[in-house]
Amino acid sequence: MTTIIATTSAPARRRKLVGAGRRQWIGLLYVAPAVALVTVFFIIPLGMTAWMSLHNWPLMGAHSFIGLDNYWAILRDNRFWNALRFTGYYTVIVTIAIFAVAFPLALFIERPRQLTGFYRTSFFMPAVVGFASASLLWSWLLNVDSGLFSPAAFELGLTEKKVNLLATFQPAFWSIIAMVVWKVAGFTMIILMTGLQSIPPDLQEAAMIDGAGPFARFRAITLPLMRRTLALALILSVAGSVLAFDQFYIILRGGPRNQTLTAVYWIFNQSFVSFKLGYGAALSMILLVILVALSLVQLWLLRKPEGVD
Image (cartoon, rainbow, N blue to C red; front, top):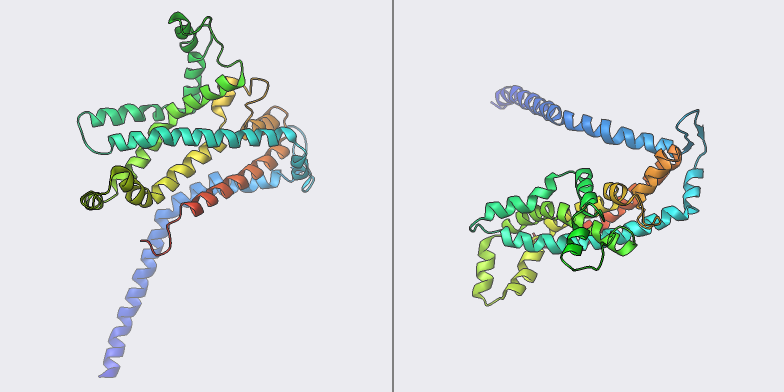
């Protein structure tokens, strides 16, 4: 009887193994398009950029291998380090501003009420506009003569004359901050709203019964349960800010007096204005390392405490 069981179970095991192998191949076929896209549009360009960074690679003419010379040159590039310092300053300010606007909006539209759909659509609508289009729009709004803000302030008697908001650093910088918050806060609001809606209402009700006030519930329930959502929103915001280019290029052109040069703007300048593609590739690799390090630090800071599900 033992022999009969063994012989009858062997084909079943073979069929099971064949079925498992077929499912694995089907799974590979499903992910193949995504793997192909990542390979073609990320892995291969990343490898080419790393290879270019080791060369003197002019736009025209032959390139030559120079090893790590481009990276040594970065250490002496004060303009890049100033641009990186400004990028860090901009990233901190704009990230705080975005969350300061997006979080109250998310709390406001979280629960269904009258006109909630209208509010959600209105707040999110600027996110649909591309950064280049938004920058062109605000470039007109900020124009000292034919724009909206400065002429309107003059006509209303708020200023003695038309003020050029892009002539000095502080007004120009805060104008860019206002534009980015208007453009991005709605997108961040939607991310935070999904995190708020994932919190079980029973926890909030139990805390209210225990006598916890709004601030206590926000600190003890809302923030801990939104760690992953906050991590996602923060990483997207920081990454987008570190890679800021369109608004500074279209509206300010790096001015006034090169005070608003971002890291990506300087990479663009070296690569496509000075035509030093190898040096621009090395700058890009340095910025990639900085961006990955920032993302890892944010994930570590917002990780869930051990023992918490």
